[in-house]
Length: 149
Image (cartoon, rainbow, N blue to C red; front, side, top):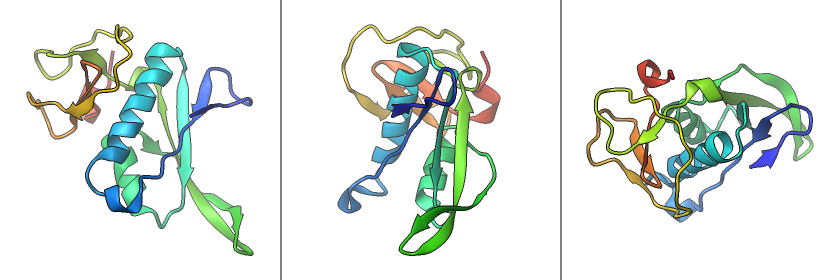
């Protein structure tokens, strides 16, 4: 994660899991942890990242964490002598739901920073839905109906 010098209270994120660790949820857990730090610890307003339109795995990761596609930046990156498109994704502070675990109901609304600096990210065993994840004892559910304060 890097603060964006061109946007007040904004940051960019990126992740690249090792090839032998892809497909098991580490990318999603990383994004959720970065978003928790960005919004609750740093008080940011917007977090964004861009990827190749060919990177369908990253697109799925962004989608399952509630980070939405913003369109296409045409011929945005020069790579191996060719101009390539990139697809930015972004999420705003008001679109995330971090609530103390265990929460009851589909969308508990408390938003406070975690009290401990432990890096424990795991699927939420209560699982109110397929997008439930717990970070440092805080529950993340990015289902669109749950992304309100």
